[in-house]
Length: 282
Image 1 (spheres, helix red, strand yellow):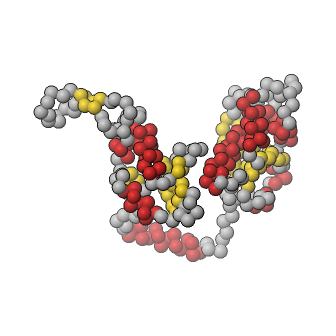
Image 2: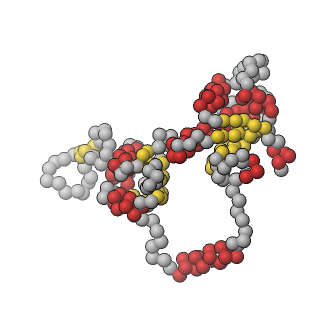
Image 3: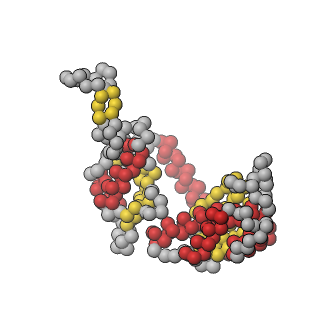
């Protein structure tokens, strides 16, 4: 669903004034007006709107996520409900959708985004989709890597990097995270210049570890279950460095923040780093 003129529902905390618009009749000699509501174009408007929406959703018995500001949910087993916010668009599902729509319309001017004024071309598109589904119903689409899953309730991560592939000798990291299918992925240039391939792989491991930890915390918040996370790398040296911090001339310069990631991860959540030869898997 979409909220019409969403930013106009926000209530700024600051005292904001605007010049009186030209051509607008007035019986007084006002030169400025004080804003009681947010306007489009103000830098505060997006936050004011989100805070107003958050307050309303809490009134409707939805719990905001502590990990991410966009998800809201009701964990009651008898009437589960999940909602995700993107600016002024709401995506939700659960056992009381109709009641939720009715309640939300009491607070905001809502628009249910469904098909409006369908034409013949839309009908032809639906026929095309049905034909495709009919002729491909025997084909299978498999998500995930079941041969690597020790149990269905595991987060499986794959990470890799090159060494000094960029012009300024920085390396590129890549990772993908699976949980019942691909859930997150990343490809980016590393912030520091790695002095060895082991350090480059270690940096990639650390970045993937941070992403998987965020996903683990979000899943725990929703399901109340601790999810085991396994990160695969094809470099034995980086795995050894992550598992057992060894200080010597070749490793003592590595960013301490990256080391802290692994130490805190090992002590808080089920976590494992393992070796996988990507070339053999291919």
